[in-house]
Amino acid sequence: MSISYELSGAIVVITINRESRMNALGPQAMVEFREALERFDRAPESRVAVITGAGRKSFCAGADIRETLPSQPFIPGFFDRDTDASHPLYIRNISFEKLMISKPLIAAVNGVAVGGGMEIALNCDLCIGSTAARFGLTEVRIGSIPAVAGIQRLLHSISRPAAMQLLLSGEIIAAQRALELGIVSEIVEPELLLGRAMEIAQQIAANAPLAVKAAKYLAGKAHTLPLNQAAEFEELLWGHLMHSDDRLEGRKAFAEKRQPEFKGC
Image (cartoon, rainbow, N blue to C red; front, side, top):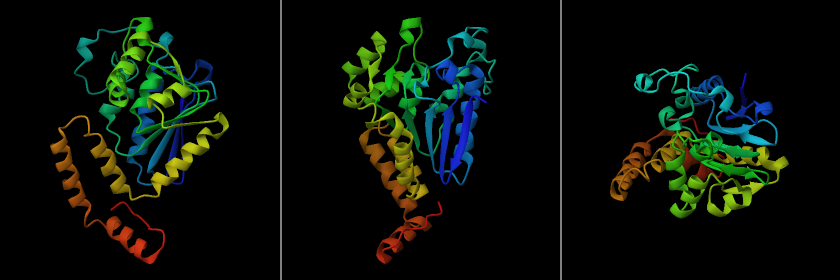
């Protein structure tokens, strides 16, 4: 399998396991990646996922160019619902916008994250990197463009001038520059990366699952709705959560000075 799936308590670690190919994704690996994300989102025991790459050299080097040469016309398949490994729109299998994962995703970038690899990192809810991490949307170098919301995510993440420089030049930047731009929230030494990602995941997993999902959902509205409409959504979801068991448990636990026992309802 090109994608490994490991459950540790309430945390899932999804590893792109193609180290000999710099963890580049061919169409079948993209299908496996989608299946891992869907499995995580469906599993009631899982609350947070950490996505990383095998080894220390690469998080994901994007699409495996040797396996992704055009084979079928694009337009006839545009309206298809199912996109298996042989479909011309195989990239939909790593489209986070279409998968609509409801739980938090953390990218732990351990090395090169270029092309689709950087897009995966940008589409996660937060990203931390090792000091060896490198980032770039390099598609223009080979006559292509980012295709799974990479352009939109980058422009929503950093200033337009900085984003356009990266996008149009195909430049690959080091971890420190990614931190300065806000692409990653922090950088750590390579041997500490997965442990730090798991630590953050544990902090998230300890919180009320419905509240975490609601916060993620509302964050997604920040760039798609006017401020007044997004604020109304916040109020409506707050009202829906008001009488949830978890909200009541959180208040009881606080008053009793104990750890809450959230059940996601």
